[in-house]
Each structure stands twice: as structure tokens, then as C-alpha cells.
Length: 139
Figure 1 (cartoon, rainbow, N blue to C red):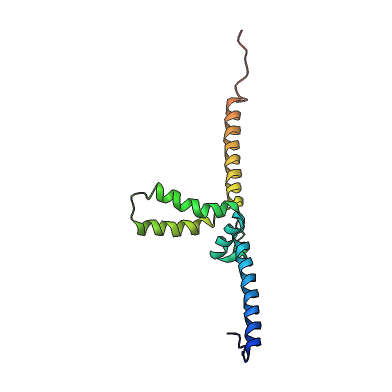
Figure 2 (spheres, helix red, strand yellow; figure 1 turned 180 degrees about the horizontal axis):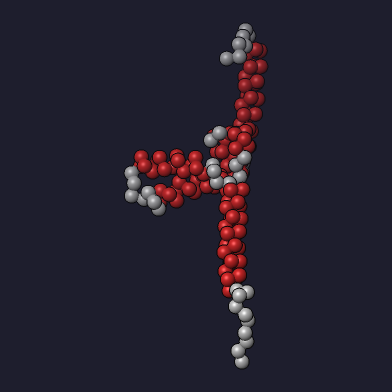
């Protein structure tokens, strides 16, 4: 309680007015949280740790999506015949592992794969054009 002492009818009326104004303000704030899909998504995300913790973790779109997709994919494919306890554990572990998946990590792996393929194809090209064997044309 706020510790307001109501001694007469005027105090009661002013307190009722104050509470109605507070109710209207809170209703407007709640409507704002559910006014658009992005606001609903933001509200749901704030339930899982709040916007400050998401900013601290520097989560990007790929990380957020992988937190939901990775457990579903694992439970539908690798652990499809498992019981609900195993599926629950897989969900928890894969959500934690999804924190390691980010756009930077995927881009880094992609760049390494491209470099490796480039080295392999370069090596193969150099083997095809061996300088020890002279080029001869046949007519």
C-alpha cells in the first residue's frame, strides 16, 4: 500500500481518481506491448531475459532463430523415437549451443570452406599443367 490515509469522502474521491488514472496509464502500456508483431516478439523476448541481456549477449537474427529451430530439427530427426525427457534435455542443450551460432561464426566457417576449396582447385589446376611435360600439339 502507499500509506495514504483516507479521512473523508473527498480523500476517497481523489484516491479513486488517482487509481483510475494509474489504471489508464497501465492499460496504455500493456496495449503498446501488444500493438504489433514486433512489439509482441519483443515482449516475449523480454520474458526470456530482457532486452538488456540480449544486448549483452549481442544476439543477432541468426542466433535468435537457431534457438527455436535447432531443438525442433534435432527432436524431429535424430531424436524422433526418444521419450520426452531426452527431448527436453536435447532442447535445453541445443538452446545453449545455439548461443554459439552467430552470423560472424557462420561467415567465418564459410570463408574457411571457400579458402579450402580454392586451395584444392588451385592445386588441381597446377597438377593439370605440369611444367615438366612439354606441351605438344598433335595434328
